[in-house]
Each structure stands twice: as structure tokens, then as C-alpha cells.
Image (cartoon, rainbow, N blue to C red):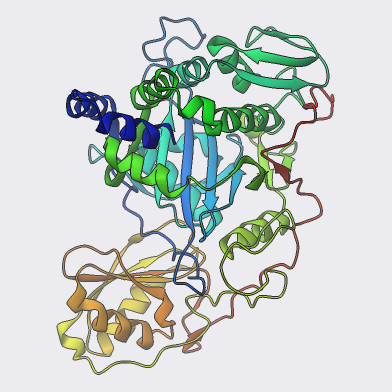
Length: 485
């Protein structure tokens, strides 16, 4: 948002072009994704608009911090200690901020890092190991495999960025129900309203041992309060219309973020920000899936980590994917009322009719996104018997919905024919492959023996009872230590 305002101011400035070049040089970027096909996007609304998902990653790297924050050896890319999916509704007037705690034990997909190194798929490891396995694109692919939400963009922010952004907006106010004194983060705050400086802002979002239940799960209450206050400050007209403050935010943001390649550049980021300009703090819902602790893990190093409570977690993910509002507000999809709207069809709920295509001219690579053995090889043989040039590819982690991707426009008919041959819906077919090969990724919905696939799980009618929803404009104090773990 500050970038949008700054671009307007710069347009009338003789040195504007040079300053934009300076900002562009500040911004670091990396590939979108780490080699895994993304899940299908959400259903388009009545006006053809679709939701957007932006992954916000917070790294704990101590690079360039002079050893002031412990763990001095952690000066590389770090761990993804904060993982928040910002789901922007199709009308771009509201959003959900979905927190995925760093210690959650999840299955990680195979990841190819920007330098070409490949990390094999692994099961049942903390989410915050993804960044070190393959950069922000690997965090993106891991989050996609967990939530089935297609991530369109990501922004990775470091420690220094939190400090600089807090100072750039003139401090961030938080309201505490009780004092906080944390010897680990060195945060010492009284009860009531406090304006945080940059250093305190970093301490505030990092603190966990003296708030809530003392874990990364409870820490989200602090991060939610900080982000809500920062959002209100940045959207305040006094901040955006003051060039000194606006440019300070721009400098802080561009110096401290890594973004995906498609939005690398000041004007591209300004365009993205401009598309989100109508989202008000009151229309941002902060949520966390229902979580539990892993007291009974056989491996000691995995004890006292976290896990999703099912089916509540997946129900929440499906609600978000289907663009249901979580706070009981009006529909933001431009379609029917959300309480009664029909669930979006899954890519495999309605088998397609095969177009007239010569299978001998279609090359297919089949990947197994399930735990079923030999699924890729058996399916590629099935396609070969039908006349396609099909081979079995590598595993693709854990995928819920099957996809069929093609790289060039003239391959679309071939991809549709492959989908029909496997009993998949045309909605499973989308651009996104590479070269001249149609890439099939078989998910848990695929049923190889039935000539079709199982129906998608229904979209829940309400937020799970153990999920708390908080709005970005809440003014009540933030609850600190509860002592429950």
C-alpha cells in the first residue's frame, strides 16, 4: 500500500526513475515453487474472478544482526518460523490470515532449491524445516500440500524487516491484558496500551515462553495483535499521505523482503498492493487451525511439537478454498449467499468427455502424489496401452486433488484427452507444465480401478467449533500467559 502511494509521489519527482531503480536493487527474489505442480486454483465467482493466496514467511536467520539475538551460527536462510497464508477473496475486499504454526509435524514434498539441489520427500517433520530444504519455494510447495490452497505469491521477511517496518510507521500500538516479562526475548511490557519501537516489535512477535501456553501455537496471539495494529497504521491516511513515512516504509520493505520472481520489482509490487487497496482491517479474519501437542511421539525430539486436529483442520482449509467467509459477514465471491452456495466441484468429481486427439502425438509424465505403491507406473502403462507416450515420474509428496498440466496452448486438447482417459474432470486441466510434456499428478482422490474418481468431501457449513476467528480491527486486550500446555 505504501508502494502504491510512493509511486504516485514519485511520478511527479524528477529523480523518481533513479529512486525506483534503487528500490528494485533492494528487492531479493527467488523462483515461485520448488518443482511440484500446484493444486488447482479456487472456483471463479459470477464475474469470473478468483481468490488469491499470498504466503507470508518469517525467517529466523540472524544474518547481518551482529550476534545480538542468540543462535549466532544461524546466518544462512534460516527456518520458516512464521507461515501465514493471506487468502484474498475474489472481490478483493476481504481476506483471511491463516496461521500454520512452525512446529507442526507435516509431510514434506520433494523440493528443488534455486541452486538445483534436490531434497527428497520426507514424512512427519516440523514445518519450519521447509525453508532450509529448498528456499521459500519449498515452503510454498509444503504449505500447498498441507492446505490444498494454490499459493500465487510469497513474501519472506527477516528479523531486520520487522524492526525497520515498526520504526518506519512511527511505532505499533498493542494492548495487553497483563504484563509480559520474557527473559528469552528480553521483552518487558506493562499491562495496557504500549507503543512498540522497532526493537520491541521484533521482541513482541518472537516472544512465546511468557505468553499464552508458552509455545509457537500460543505465540500467534501476539503476532495477530502486532499485524492487526501494523495494518491499521499502514492503512491510515496520515501514514500513507506523508511522503517521509511512506518512503520509510518502502525502504524498510524493499530492504528486508524476498519475493517470488513474477512480482520482483517495485512497480510489480505496487500493482499487487494496488489490487488489495480496498481491504480494510475490519475485513481481515485471523485464524489458526485446531491444534494439539505431540506428547506421545516415540522420538524424543518430536515430543512437545504440534499437530493438526482432524477433521477440523481440513474442514477449515476447505472453507477457505471455497471462499466462505469465517466471520458471518456478507458474501465476498460475487455469487450466491455463502451459507447456501453449492460447493465448488473438485477436479475429479465430474469425468470429462475425451476430445478427438491422436494419443500417439501426446507425451505424458505421470507422478504419484499418494502413498499407493506403483500408482504412477501402473497409470502410465494404462495410458501407453491407449496409445499415449507415457512414462512414470518421481513421487510428488502428498496431494489431495489430481492435476493435469500442459506447458503450451496447443497441448490443451491433449491434456483434456488424458484427463478423460483417467476419469478426471476438465477442471483438473490447467496450464503450468513445461516443454512439450503433459504432467499428470495423481492425488488421493484418484481411483485407478473404477474408471473415475471419488466425489470431493463436502464443504463444511460453518467454522469448526474449536477455531477462534479474530478480526483485524479488534480493540480488546490480548490475553497473555494462561499456563495451559
